[in-house]
Amino acid sequence: MSFLKRDTKSCDTQVSSFFIGNFSIDESSVFIQIALNTSKDDDVVKCLNESLKQCQTQGQRFKKFMIKEGIHLPPTSEERPLSNPDGVPLGTKLTDDEIMNGLSIKTVTSIVHCATSAAQSIRNDVSAMFTHAMLEKMQFGASLKDLMRKRGWIKVPPYYYPPGAPK
Image 1 (tube, rainbow, N blue to C red):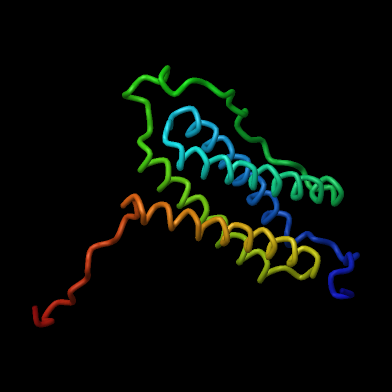
Image 2: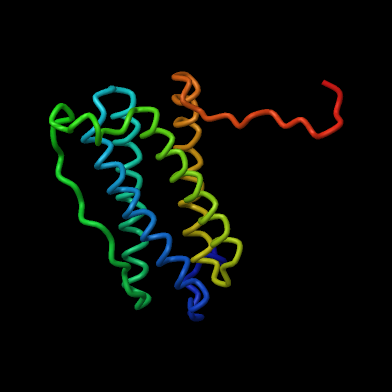
C-alpha cells in the first residue's frame, strides 16, 4: 500500500508517544514477570505468558523503529528472573484477582495510548504501527475479559442514582 511507505518527514511530534509507549511496554513486562513468580493458576499463567510474548514482540518492533529514527530508549526496570511462587512470602504476594485486574488496567491504558498516538500521528507509517499494536492489545483484551468474567474478577462500579430519581 502506497500510503504506508516510509514517510521522510520528521517524527518529532511522535517522540513522546514512542518514549511513553516503549516505557509502558517494558514496565508491563516487568509486572507480568513478577506476576508469573506469584501465581500458580494455570489459566492466569497462560494469560500472563501470552501477554508477555506480545509485549516482547511489540517492544522489539518499537525499539527497532526508535533506534532507526534516532529516538533515545527510556530507562526501565530490570527484567525479573523466574522463581518459585511458593517461595514468595504471603504478605508480598499478589492474588490472582489483583494480578488480572492490574493486567487489565495496563492493557486498557496501552489501547488508549495507541489509539491517541495513531490519531495524532502526522506520518502514516507511525500511525499504522500504533494501530497495529492497538489491535493486538484489543484482541488480547477480549480474551482477558472473558477469563476475568468467568472467574468473577471484573470490578463493576456501583450503580448511580441521581438525586431525586424514583427508587
